Amino acid sequence: MKLEEVKSALAQLDTIAFQLPNGTLVPNHFHVTEVGKITKHFIDCGGTVRHEEVVNFQLWNANDYDHRLHPEKLVNIIALSQKTLDIGNLEVEVEYQGQTIEKYSLDFDGTHFLLTTKQTDCLAKDQCGIPTEKPRVKLSELQQTGCAPGSGCC
Image (cartoon, rainbow, N blue to C red; front, top):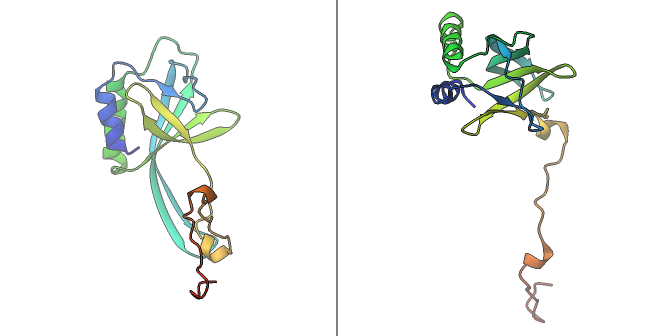
């Protein structure tokens, strides 16, 4: 989900809720402690130099049950971050404290922001000798073709 999509979703909401991949909600007394731009400049295992930027939201549970974060407050924090840090319409990732700091992608279902899982991947499979996955074909869907004697197909 891109930052402008987050802002559009916030404009429709009276309250903010984040849902973890297991379906539970982040406690409603969470705080967004950071909105930032994360820049990753790296080389993959195939030798290609890469550059990525994302917007990062850090969610934190405080023992402060009286100060819920409202959508308009988060919109103001985002606007200040965009102006101060020169943040464009980048993909948003979310950090949340689980067993360790967990990173999620973000989606929206019309009511809740959904924290979706992220996976590691090899970005240079062709250079590492990792075979591409062959498409699976159901034998029952293959057309029966036969070879006629003398046709040269067998």
